[in-house]
Image 1 (tube, rainbow, N blue to C red):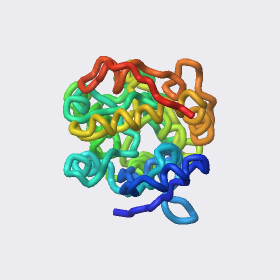
Image 2 (tube, helix red, strand yellow):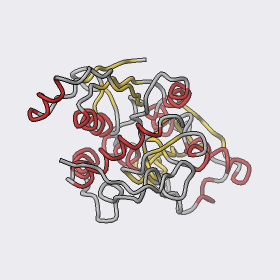
Image 3 (cartoon, rainbow, N blue to C red):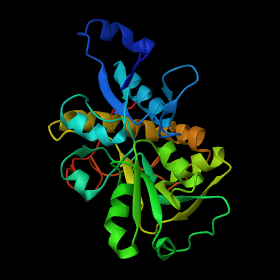
Length: 280
């Protein structure tokens, strides 16, 4: 596991008041540091990406420091539940199964499940084109769950890896027919790997990417969500999205949409109490 300590700068106007307050411990969170462009190694050391910039800004606005660990995604939720982290900085797909055991913020991004294939492979036009094929995924993700859920129906073979780059390489090397991941990650990999192209998006797989907390962390969930709401209002989330993903978010994107209450509406853990963040 790699750990990166990120100091959060204080606003000058807030320094006198904060000087009187007891020092708070750093926020602790974690990412999969191989999930570009959300979090991936920087040439200067440590990790960079959308998630890093997003949660550094969250910490800065709270006047806190933040420690971000980098580890395999499959181990992040168990580590969160064990108390190692306050929340996860990793983009985490909000599913009903996860929402039953974790608390989530509302989505700050939407994700869809998308396949990447090796250049020269015939395009995938429906999931029937996957029949009898081998699909590579990152372990512990909804992508792995999709393959497992459709394994018998489509006679699929699963290749699960600890990192997304390994799952992409399996496609390039011909060990897997296609790689299934989130659309932002597939598009980013395709933009930097000529042999790999973004292909079929699974219909009906639009999910929130939110921030997970333990179920006993409702107060902290609400605090973080209020900050994210303020960052949506002032355009910060949209600017970070455009920087890292290359496209300006549309008016119906999660980057600019303020959802009612706390948490993804309609799922376990949703709190209908109206948000009323004090944004400055």
